Amino acid sequence: MIFILAQIMGAVSGICFMLSGAQKTHKKIMILQIVDCTAVLINNLLLAGYAGAIMSGVSLTRNILSYKNKTNTKVTAIIMIISIILTFSFMDMSIIWNWLPLVASVVYTLGLHYGDCKTTKLHILINVTIWAIYNIFIKSYILNIFNVLTFIVTLQSLIKENKTKS
Image 1: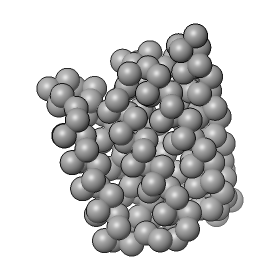
Image 2: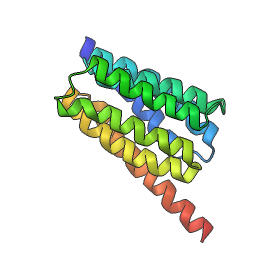
Image 3: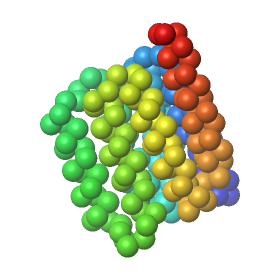
């Protein structure tokens, strides 16, 4: 039953993250990603993906701050430092997949801080690829289906935006 609930939460997370890649405003992206982070946090906890759960909690905080336009260079640096401290404090870093959520979180945090909507979408592509690898290790199968779909939707959105601006 726990495994099934985890997969359901993975589906909710995946749907929200996938839809976020097709949005045209930063606020709409963040609303969907706040729901995504909440669902993936539960998914990771249920599947004993504790490195992912830690980063999902930090990412949830980051996304709420980003939605409220409360981020700046100092806040971004603090978020990344907290991510690193929490990961190294609670995880066995000799296990390679425990690095993946941290890398994904840092890359995406930088993208949110330094980018516009297009840059955010490029960082979504990188982020979803790293998480897809992690999800294989923790057996979050449904979420990985959505990782592939998110990659496709986000890439199509970027291509469409580039054609429109040309």
